[in-house]
Length: 386
Image (cartoon, rainbow, N blue to C red):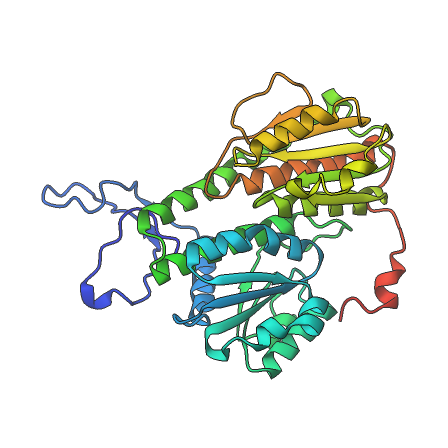
């Protein structure tokens, strides 16, 4: 679970659930005791404790012998699963896959070949009412798989149909383009990965604490990044007269590129496209022209040099080329927005927030309402939600 500092307990209690309600020792002055010297005493908030209890219930639904996780979700939830699946696989030792509901329902032969007692299906839906996710959940359940859902709404169809549920805790969002739900999904998926990893023994307590601290620090930096991104947009006049958008990313932030194009498509109601950076030269590059806007995501990854080369190449080819960079260093180029680098999670939360700011800023800067009616009745027409 989300433990802080070193944990001490008898060998016989090694597999027992420990709920950390307080951190450290309120006295911490005993001469003979060094157990809590690394912790400053505090009482954890009720919300933290409830989150850990919820996560414990969810982990209990995932057998220790589990070998594979299949995420099934639409839209932003699918993007979040795509962004985190490889991370979850790496830290937990499980095979992790992301499917859209239709792809699982009609191309799900791989799932049917899995052992029922070592595979878990995880539908994700912020509202818990996504028809496709519910249909995929019901099908997987009929096929004998255990269901662990991720949603924000207790008592929703997805919650009630599942064996266990992780709650997002993001609250209702009355907007077309959801942002809190996406960030909360990322955070819960990353947490799920490390909780499974520490339980399965695929990561040690040191790495667990490092990743947990990365997530805490990114959350603490969110407000500063939001203000910095708004100021950057204002200074740049970013997105004025934008006609279309290409978003390029890689590694964990390929999912961020997917989410970036979806958010600008939703708020600007214009053509957008995403691609993996390595795939950009296999056709998409031919569509870039004087009316194009390109948003690039950059991290200190093996593909970082290709990202920088592509950024330089596109200067003068497109109307506007900007880069969100997790280099950790401020760039002299005003078209580059920098955030701190967090290697384990590839600055996922910070780059996502910058994307979300752009998705709000650009339509308003162009005099558009990001929540304007645009074929809204289609979702009712095809019964997107139950």
